Structure formats: structure tokens, C-alpha cells
Amino acid sequence: MKKLSIVLLILMVMMAAFANGAKEQATPSKSISLWTYPIGGWGDDAKVKALTDAFTAETGIKVEVQYLTYADGDDKVNTAIAAKQAPDLIMEGPERLVANWGAKGYLVDMADLLDAGDRAELNQATLKACLTADGKLYEYPLVMTAHCMAINLDAFKAAGADKYVNLTTRTWTTDDFIKAVDALYKYYKAPVGAVFCGGQGGDQGTRVLVNSLYGGTFTDAAHTKYTWDSPENVKALKQLYEMPGIVYDPAIAGGDEINLFRNGTFKMAFCWNIAQQPLNDQKTDAGEQIVFMSFPAQNGVAQLNGGIWGFGIFDNGDAEKIEWAKQFVKFMCDGPKTADAVKTANYFAVRDVAGGQDISKIWADDATMNEYNVLMQYLGDYYQVTTGWATARTCWWNMLQAVGAGNDIAASVAKFAADANAAAAAGK
Image (cartoon, rainbow, N blue to C red):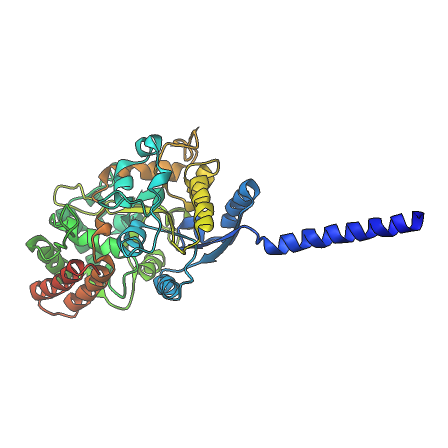
């Protein structure tokens, strides 16, 4: 009897183990996927893993991350959407999440994540950019910044052009910009800046440069049409074309321009923001001082293009994964790791309070970030949510190429702006 009892006990243990194993196989582990563009340190696997590991430890939900580039990221996402294999989460800005994939019905409305407190705590301009006209939230914002330009201060001093910039307010007038470029060109006897137009990369720089010189705009205030075919913008494009110190270069995009600025080829860069500043310790490759600047404007105060980044959730038909993804969004944007998520992005938080914690002073010990804050007052309208945005961006750099090739400026501007507006009217 004793031996029989032992055998029965062993069989019972084995059956229990088998049952537990079958249960584990029948219940898949919690897992969601995140695709992220290189938004500061959110393109760095080690930094992102520290954040996702913290989320997994808190919730038991594993996060599989894929890193996109701006060169082919959109194509990868669109291909995945077409194949019904889109990721659960995507990190980027409203121009993609709200005006593109959200508008096309691919993303989940996250308005239920916003209570009255959230709506009060979030930067209002940022929140507006992430909401549709009918109140759908296709992007939950995490960080923001002001895009700007940069100058090689040592080069400006050598050419006697430093007198044309206000290093306290980081502003300058259109007339002073023209004088500075002329002084630099005479000193270096070579172009000192470029209207880069090899693609859409960094096009926020060329848009603000052209718009701000004579007070032009890119869209109307209601974000219903593109207005870059105005006399002010035509005048700006003509002014840039006629300056020997500025070239229209169809061989480079924003990233290439930055490299040429850092290696000393150019003395100014139109594709710049805070993410670039610490990377090179505020120095060019030759050790010359880099100073960030607002774009030139007739009255000296340009309306800068802002950057907003956050998370969207693809509607893949899995309600459970959507809920897990929402947990991730709140964890990063309004939870215990928001300060770390913001600092990883290396931009400014879109709120001062997250998860009940004050995060307004997370950059208090960073001299560069505090210094850069002077530009935030110059932020203009976030027009990148205008319908037809993807087409408009292509039309913009194609137009710059046409102008740079010597085609009639007014005719080129009219043609490509019309193409952009046709896409907007068609809802593309």
C-alpha cells in the first residue's frame, strides 16, 4: 500500500505539471511592439531598453522595439499597414500620426486617456496639434522643441559678421542676415549656407527660412490649404537665389547640411535644434563655437517651426493589445518614468506635472537646455497637420529644386503649391 501511495503521488504531481504546462502554452505572454523614429535617445537601444524594461517590470507586458530611420521609415510603416502587420505602437509627430495615419483611420482614438487634469496640464498648442477637429486623440504627446538654425560664431567673427546677430535674444533681422551672408562670402570666397533640397529630411529649416524672411506663411490659420505661393515667399526664394553666399543644393538633405556645417564647409545651418547641440559639445569638428539662432525676420522675430513627438496606437483589431499599448502610453507620458522618457528624447516636456510628480525642473542642471529655452517663446503655428501633408512636403523640395535649377520662380511656386492643394482637397 505504501508503494502504491507513492506511485499515485508521483502520477498526481506529473499530471499537475502537465496541466500547468498546457495552461502556459495556451496563454500567450503579454507582448506589444513599438516602432520608433530616431527621436533623440529613442533611437538608442540601450536607453530605450532601460525604459521598456521598467515598463515590463511594472506591468508584465513585454515590449519589442524596432528602430526606424527617416530615410525609409515611412515606407516600412506603410508596407506593414498594407500587409496588416502594423506595430502596436508608433513614436513620431502629429504630421504622421494625426494628419496621415490617424486621418486615414489606422490609429486608435486615445481621447479616453485624457481627463480634465491632463487637458489642463498639457501644453495647449501641443495638445491642439495632436487632436483632430472632432476631438480624436491620435497622438499622446511626450516632448516638444523649437527648430532653429545655427551659426559658426568664430567664422562670423573672422568675417566681421558677428555684429549682425543678437546673441542675447538669438534673433536677427532679414537685412542683417543678408549683410552677414555677404560679409562671410567675401571673406571665405565660397558659399556659406545652402537651401538643401535633396529630399524632405530637415525641410522644417527651409520652410521657416523662406517664410520668415518677408513674413510669408506655409498654410492658412485653419490648416485647410497651403499658402506658400504668396508674393512674400516668392520674394524670399528670389532673394536666396540671388545671394552668391547661398546655394540651392539638390544633392543634400538636412542631415548632410549638418555634416557640412560641422566640418566647416558651411558657416551656418538651417537644419538645427537642441538635439544637435550637445552631440558635438557646441563645437565644429575644428573646435569652432556653434551658436544656435532663430531664423531672420523683417522685424527680427521669426515664427519658429515646432517639433512635437509622442505615441500613437495602431488599430490592429486586438482589443487586449490596444489596452496594453494604452498602459505603455500613460506609463511613459504621464507616469513614473515620464521624466526619464523626456530626458531620453533630449527635448522639452509638454507638461510640468506627470503622474502627480513635478517634472518642470528636469533640465535645471543642464546649461545648454536652459539656454535653449530662450527660443521657445518664438514658437509659431504647428501647421504640419494640414491635410495632404505628405504630398505637400514632396512638392516643397521639388519646388526648391526647380527654383535652384533656374526655372521661373513665381511659376514654380504656383505649380507646386497647386499640386499640394490638390492633394489637400482630395484628402491625400
